[in-house]
Length: 142
Image (cartoon, rainbow, N blue to C red; front, top):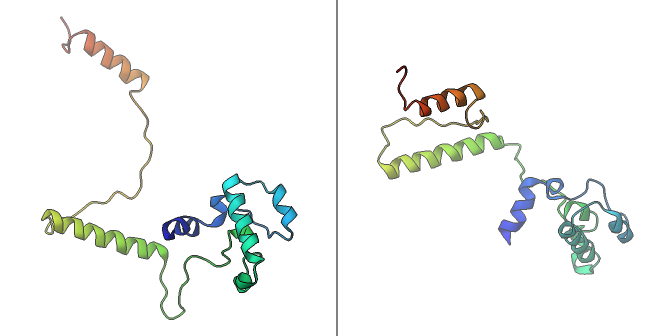
């Protein structure tokens, strides 16, 4: 269950298909432009929010955000860092663990952080050249 909730919390409810405006009445849910699964989650938040024992959670107020009104991560005023710095620290730690397990602690590691699509297959010119080499058996001239 925690993994399921984390999936939506870390992405943000909008990317899960939730809506950006509050729902004022149950009848408003009929017109929401969301997938059936998201509508069920919003409807469940609305239903649970109407039960007295769950009233303090404000589920109806935040039903459009799948019941969660906060942000999935918060930072203290005394100790603040960025999520980028946390991801980098974790990546560095995991890379060091991997090098240690492979016995490569004295080797440097190159990490490629960005990939770019360069294309697929040969260019038309390269394809023609490759075909001519294949037909000639790989020899030039005769």
